[in-house]
Amino acid sequence: MQKLVVVAKTKKHLLELIEKDIDAVLIYIDKLSVNNSFSMSINEVNEIDFKGKEVFLCINKIMHSSSLPLVREFLEQVKDKNYKILFYDMGVYNIAKDIHIEDKLVIYQDHLNANTYSNNFYYDLGIKGSYINIINCDIPNGWSSWSRFKKSFNKFSSWVNFFAFFIYFFRK
Image (tube, rainbow, N blue to C red; front, side, top):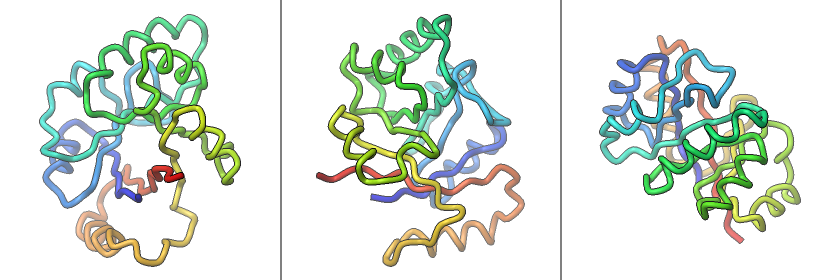
C-alpha cells in the first residue's frame, strides 16, 4: 500500500496540511531526528487532532548509548498511540522489540532496504513497513493518489519543505 505523506515546515503549516487531501503527515521528533528544519516534542504531537490522518513519527538519528534512555522513554509514550515510527538505527528496533511494538516500526534507511532480500529480512524481524523514496523514481501504474498529489502540489507549490515518498507495507 502506498501513502502520500507530507512534511510540514512549521506547526501552523502542519495544522493546515491536516485539513488537506493527503494520506498522512510525517513529524520529526526533537532530540531523536536529524536532517530536518522543523521538529516537535512527543507531548506537542499528542496534543494535535490529526482528523483521521495517519501519523508517522521520524527518529532517524544514529543513536549513541547516551540517547537510548530517551528512545525508550519516547517508545513507551507512543506504544498505545496509533502512530507509525520511521527509524534508522537498529538500536531502536531492539528497544521496540523489548516493549513489543516492533509492528509500529517502518525501516527508514535510504540505501540499505533497496532490494527484496533486505525487506524480507526486516519483515521477518517483525518490521512491517519500509520507506522508499520516489522523488527520483517512476510512479507505479495505478497509484490513484498520484492525481491527487499533482493537484495538491500544483495548488500548494509554495511549500518549501515538501517531500513525497512511499511508505510500503509488506505483504508476504
